[in-house]
Length: 347
Image: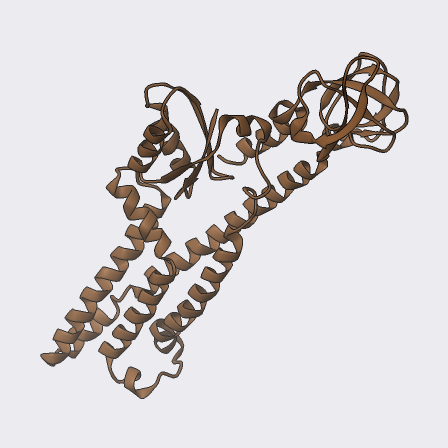
């Protein structure tokens, strides 16, 4: 299995588009894209360069994340789950809202509530239109990602939600520019009635409002996504980082503390009272009670004897036990739970 980083995805339609593009490559047996972690898992014999090229042709970016061996040792890393979007969206919303309030004051305040406007604006409709156009342009620059993603999707014949936002706000902005020119022409020819008609047809505030409200929605989405990744990181922290493994010939085994990544299926590991069980295994010596609440939610410890199964991230309460590792890496119950939660919230 090959792991890839995927950039440029903004919604479920994007991840579906990437899956479809990669799945069509000869030699790809399966492809799974996670919007939550912006990653992709590909199984098959297809060349990585061909896969990256297919993703690029679909309008997104891709790069090889790790080797197949590394992918088997770890599922989703904590760095991949770090919430970097929420701070960015907060900043975008802050500035968008600030300029939108000024825009709404100029466009609506004096007409609906008689709010004060400086003389150079109050006595010149063209100046009001130009001020609105400038403020809307700033909001569009702040939210340029909508236009980059949206029009890129159109170019690659894969429109997404950003395409709708970009088209709606761009249409309002372009028509507003047209109205400003027509209003200027009417004023030059002394047609005050026509100038006032076009004054009411400035839709700059609509473009600014669309972008700001969608940015608010994106912020709430990013916040919800961040809460989910926090829960996943909490699950990942449950797994111990080391294990006490018995090495050497039978009868002369020595206990060694090794990183959890070095534990292999069939290794014998020991767990003392109060320690977390490092990987899934079968008890071969001793008996104990295990707190499995982290995985099952059951608060009462479960009694375990020889032959019983124990799972990673559960806590050994009482006895000293020896276990034979049965599942390690991404095959453990904890890793499968993390993967299922990650996949479930990515769509």
